[in-house]
Image (cartoon, rainbow, N blue to C red; front, side, top):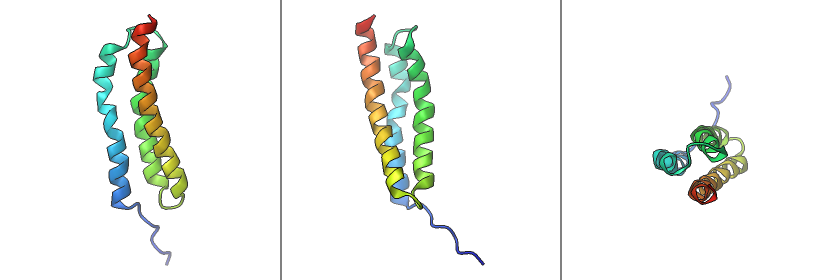
Length: 93
């Protein structure tokens, strides 16, 4: 009989969910970004990327902890990048 695979700790699950909370600013960002242009396209891709990144980090944590932390770090950086993109897109147009 094979041993059960290790599970992701609850504290890491909480961290991943906490880092997903900025996705809820999507409706606000949708209101401030111009209706046409590449910023709008990137904004629509952003929630899907964030959910997939958090899920993959949660999924790979038991075997590859460093990769999980890298994924969450990139998720955090993407939140910052989207916020900067949306707030400066009005100034560019």
